[in-house]
Image (cartoon, rainbow, N blue to C red; front, top):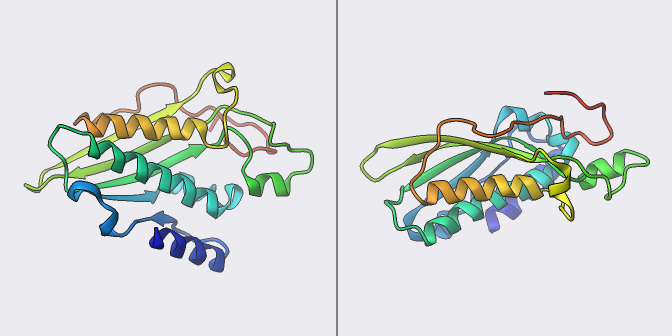
Length: 189
């Protein structure tokens, strides 16, 4: 927890970091699994728009989901899991987006999701790469959604699969259809 607070303070002090990552102290790792989360280039371009605190928040959510998955896993556990949040799209405007755009409301809603890749390293030195994504396709399924509802669904899916020893190698399912930049023109990528 201390490293996340230090990261938040460092990002706030720098205004905008070129790389944002949440890497909790090894003491937090359950059952000997060291879980590390970093941010991919596509998401780094959105840090200023979303706000650095949002990136820290979703990084912690992914870390916690994967760490928790190993506490109930009955498969061989890796010693280290390196995760990269390649991209993420919020369902609702972030705090920074709300502050910049007149007329934008927290009631504004969109289709969200996330794309995650990574590598699981086992005690014998072998590695299993993986990549997964989840993006919602129907706005009716997002009633009552908070800011990162669909991104958290993607993180839960990743955690569920790798916690059970499934390492998918394709971005199965629908991909992103919007930029996630509320208050900006809608684009296809």
